[in-house]
Length: 600
Image (cartoon, rainbow, N blue to C red; front, top):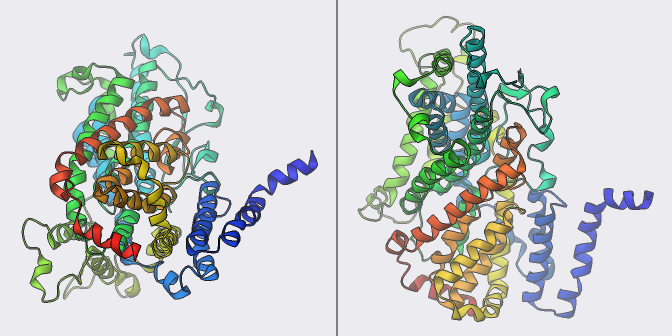
């Protein structure tokens, strides 16, 4: 037994050592570039799936194995680890750090809650819209970590309002049931062991960005039993519905922009490397395609969550009439208003951050809109400027602009005492370092290195030739099967690892079957984000689950519906407006050129 326990404790180390040794006969017995590349790819994939080593560390495997086996030169591998997308990420993180530092996200969230009121249906819709909006620009994980404390505080206000109503003697028979006590805490939820842990593979775009611990409402330890009691079954359903909706809305928002998730960033860089002549995917075209998907998915998911947890009485739960508000709802709105008023007037740093946020979006949209000439056409040399140019430039300016409004010709109080504080910029390098997900940068670079090795060694062409049996299927069936496959795999494997493994295979498959690669790659990239059925699917799921309002069966039941909704909408989108937007009904010349290059 002692030996067995020791082996179990050392299972990761054994996996790290044994996997390369067991697979070593592949490149030794078949000394070719394809076999060597397959060896590196399988070893890296096993490390990623098992997380025997951190994802970022596993992504470094191609950096030393490719040169060792003669697949790529060391300088060629090194060049894959820092690409244009990395600069895009750096600029976006600068703006995200400013948003988080100056609480602009909290002001937006509370304002939207005030607009919606305390009716459960409208509150659900409001929080989903707010989370979706924030998740377009911040990571899904960071957005969920920001919004969930606000959601929990709102639920606390609803409970407190009920208690006051009981003291006043206005309680109903339903409200007389026992309720769990709730306590304030500045630490993570009591079930913090359920929060994202690297060894369990809980990863997501720009993961683990919540560097500050917000004031969180968590259940007291004595109320952590599985059958948690609420004042009524309806209250329990509201808590479940609001909590789960935050995770789903964060996923929906991440689909909307090309910088919303790491999966879309990995797709963009891989696509640009694989097909350098294809200038069809940028921030604008992705947004035009994905925004209707997100909007439709948001509305349908809201109906699904409302029907599943709150029933079909939309008239009662979504009414905006003040006459129909209960005492409980009025008190809740009053307290949320007090929280909003505590923020005070909008500050100068918030205005600067908001302006840069909007300016960056406008410049992205207008660089190459496609239907009219963009501002990039004003320059003599075309193609030198990308979305990364805009984000890095604006991010650089945030390090220069003072956080305190300049007073020309005036001296404010305390200026002589703290001159350095007066000149402090909107964000500092320390703010940027706390937010920048360097592990994801290395992970993305490792994916690019694997793809480059697969292309140069001929492995991707060989894989594509093995899939000729699928040529009898129509293109929509091939895409649907690929989407279903990745939707299942991504529930257990990290999103970046899943897309990094599948992208080279799907590119070869598309070229072999003479399908426009975008017809397969775009739906698969989106479906990889639909890991919403289990707490281990992604960090937002784990954060929501840790608050204790829902069980795994609730997540599976609700997540299955959201997964099916997303899959159906994405398939409809790629076969309707996606065809005209990306010209998917023809096999493009840029794919033919890439295929000829690979064969050569």
